[in-house]
Length: 202
View 1 (cartoon, rainbow, N blue to C red):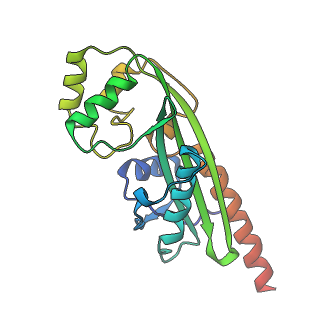
View 2: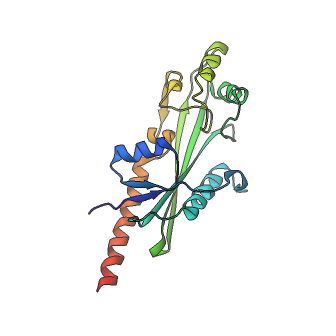
């Protein structure tokens, strides 16, 4: 079965690259959502799910696409969600908290098929272990500017990798999309759309 392009409601180049590598065709249509205003009383993971659904719902379906894909990733340490650092000082503080401990990266994925009036969300959690870091190592890492624009102030595929001895779970989830989960969801939606199209043509 041929996979039609999905509409990716994200401007993240990392998510685009992950989809490209997995052979999932897509068209980028970033969502216009104020994430800071979307908070669930049920906790950080539920907030990620609400944000992913809001992004998917707000995105404009691209021509030739029948599915919208959106995601939201949170970094959780000591039951606190680390958002995107806005200053080097904030990034330094975040990395100091992560150093020498485990934390969880949770990505909520939302898919919408408008013509089926169908929405599905799933969460994927990965545990990441950071090695202890000295003050000079944190200083060096912050100086790379890799902390900019990412939750938790690090990118596992970048310079931070040298401080991460192990992870438990999906690597691509930490990068920004749990690809195995995304593929399963897209395949199911595509199958349902094919069945729907076959029914409407009869």
